[in-house]
Length: 489
Image 1: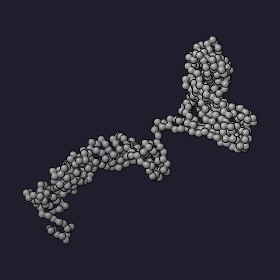
Image 2 (image 1 turned 30 degrees about the vertical axis):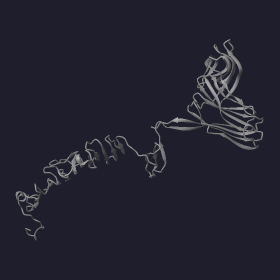
Image 3 (image 1 turned 60 degrees about the vertical axis):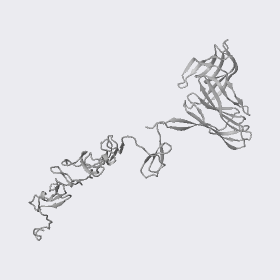
């Protein structure tokens, strides 16, 4: 100890010497030496290893401490503009497979000896070359959060991929795309989501996830799960045609949503000429060819036509139908002698005719032709219609009550059509025997009959065989569904 210990702060003082005297040739000879530390002194504390000496940083922090082989750095190089201190720990590459460093960087450039200019902005974990981590670095960029451009970024060594947190805009970015203000998360590239089961809901938090059924789901904070559909998805809409008759008063047929009405039966039609003339209301003409000797040719239908969209009339209009075979008529009657229609290969006009209609031919010889008026429901010309259910609820007032209802479909192909009985509802002779003053619910479901409403259609015939009918409160429903393509934007 030197100096007056009663009049000044206690100090540990080391003998002054020169570097030449301390830095001997002995291997790994290290020492600490000093000069007196007074306010007017310019001398410093020095640390030596076996190769060099380093002084303790001066008051302006422009120096550092370093042991050359072990590379422990503290401080900054002389002459630099300093905003903080630099800490660097580097392994000895000569005795290992590489080095692991913790280094401050400035604007993407390692701060090395004699190069510390500007604000230190980055923290780098360098695992390059032989360490086996590949040529990548983990870099944290921390700017002043008061700066509008302040970010925290993790990048690879080439700065081509990154993870960025932007506190100024409250956004997170994954990838190398630009990041706009107000974007919470931007991913440049493909995002992979593992298929999971429905997760537990978190209040006020939404979740998006795929499941093993190859659908993508959204779950809200209340746990309600919804499928996120793509542009190829469809939705199904249920349709119902309903009819109510409080008290049928006649022993006849009630046609619902269309019907088939005979205009002529067993008539010849040939090129003699033997024309066939009928009178009808508004609707299409259906021709049943039962027999003939020359079945290859055309039938010309002439008369007034009605535009089915505008109602406009065209007098003396024509429609040509090509005939190539006889029609299969498999129609029959039920126990109450009510007709039940079935036709395959009947012929039908493409236009609606009304009034006097003439059928003629220049090249056919037909000996047995039936002509019908036909009209039918086309669900406003909608395609992709499926008939599902034929349903009735009735009240019988007498055990003799008879109720017979038949649902028909008419399907068009070119100039031909097929008519088939799709469902039947019966109370009485062809069903359950009626009971006086009882309700009857009769139903045929799961029909799964597909039709194209742009060309095809349906109707129902309902028969009350008694007069009076002994039936009241008749409710009849025809249920169908329509498939609609759905696009989500």
